[in-house]
Length: 336
Ligand SMILES: C[S@+](CC[C@H](N)C(=O)[O-])C[C@H]1O[C@@H](n2cnc3c(N)ncnc32)[C@H](O)[C@@H]1O
Image 1: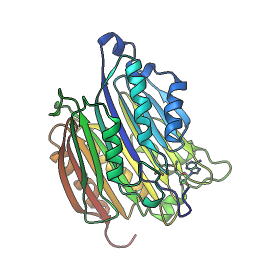
Image 2: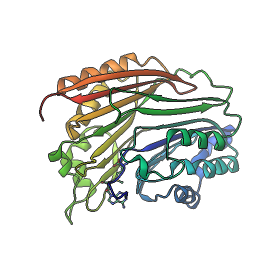
Image 3: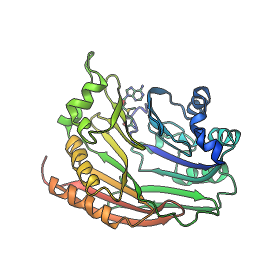
């Protein structure tokens, strides 16, 4: 941990692959053995603390956040002073070894609280992009990097996307990803993420209300000592994930899930519960969607504003293959 505090803001990498049907039908990238996965995590400087799988994907809670492995995609988020982008080279090595081809790369992150504590290549967004440009194969030729601003210098959204010549325009899809970053958590609620010797992760999931956010999800959680909490939820082919740094002065929590535009008000209901679990002073919500995202964003605002949070900014940008990214920020109005 940096002398000043723990860096909660995660770096997030998503890689997509394609391959011949038999390779994908056999499980695609899920066939990677655990030793090889550990080699990748070693480069990033984190380890697996718990895992759970279903027929669609494997989910790992890491010492610093989470990893999800699907037959044709991986999503890895890591926080602290991990070197997430150092996973690209070993991932690409194993992807090629398995007869798969990388077709898309997405990298996102918020604003580090302690930027000076970040090691290379995470010393600045410019450095991260330059490293990504060097590591990615040339066939990912459509590339775009952008910093989406908000009203607050503490919250902006860094996005890099790259894809091959076949998918510069997103293929319309009903799925969207929501990434929420929350700072200045309510102190009383944050205390629930401190452990006494007998507290289990399961108890934290229940006491905090996290278990009710998506009641149908199977939750795999971990309570850190003396504080901190991480969980992955698996529900059919959809994941959700929460990471909490509850220490006063640099408190942070993140929530991420996948939704479908056809689920009537799922995202509104989820957002309400998330805000009630953490009551953050400031919150950013980023949605990535290949179809129209305006309705999802309206649902988010309608869910959050009645809980005493006001939208302060909304920035929209388009990225190759990923589609539209909408970055909204909210702050708590009035006293807690
Ligand atoms: C790994 S967890 C959750 C990570 C998540 N990305 C976040 O934003 O908070 C981080 C919290 O656990 C605490 N913690 C305790 N032991 C830890 C360990 N061995 N590795 C990482 N974090 C640890 C940190 O101080 C922090 O409060």
